[in-house]
Image (tube, rainbow, N blue to C red; front, top):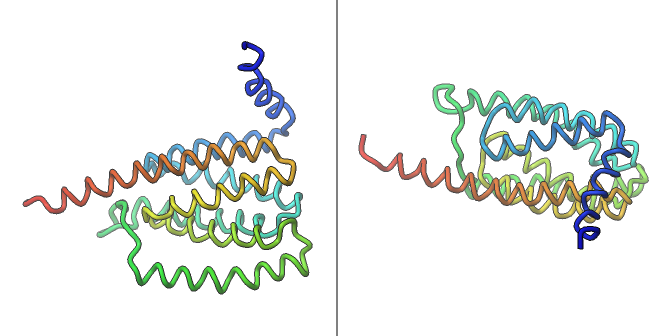
Length: 212
């Protein structure tokens, strides 16, 4: 019984020992980033920037070119999101959680479709990427999710749950079992993030409806 319980712990220790310093820093800062983002703490952004910059190199070497490009965009969106969370609200106040309206939903869906098809085609026919269409799909979903996170839209977590669940399979098939496990953690955290942000959104709405 004890041996069975120790198996996952031994796997984690072996996985961590097999990583280089850069990968360890990427995972550590990535976990801090997602925990802070769930808690709506703007300090999540500098940790996220460091994490994705390192991860960009890892996935590029693994020939997930769309994902590598995604990490570069994350760095840019990281600085943008940092500014938005601190001063992107009314009168340069910090942003509050909000919901995506129908107009924005249709616009993002159109942009996603227009981006997905050529990206998948280029990845398959010119870049020799691993799992080109799945790679392109997760790239598009994640880009939209990151934009929504930077603008503090609640629905970002729904897209993150979808993308992270896909990454669990992709990384597992690539033989990156540890990173597949990490994506499982991210998926769970995204579910927690959605629940927490929804509660915050409802609380803000109630407060706005109360007389001054």
